Image (cartoon, rainbow, N blue to C red; front, side):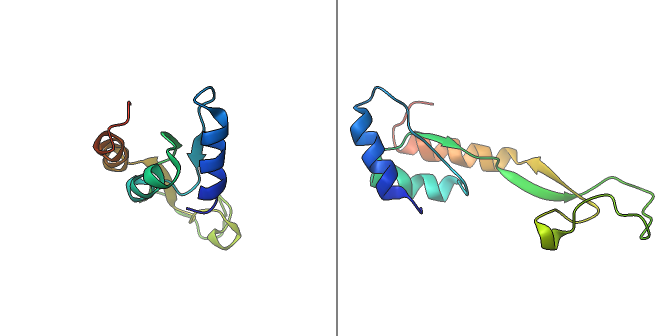
Length: 100
């Protein structure tokens, strides 16, 4: 929701000639709040969830990624896009009567 005033201003200034897209922390709840506050109708989201990796052999002496403390994910985790999160975002747009 941070930056919603700027986004609303950009939507007004664009006069419908430029599609303004919001991103960063977007989910269905954010979309439901942003549409009435900004009239933004395009959103960028990952819809990600964190899963345990399928790695069978796990050597604690060998690092395979960036530590979570530095912005990485856990040693044995992977990101995936959640179909449920994407469907929920789509439903939020449809509820607001926005074209998908």
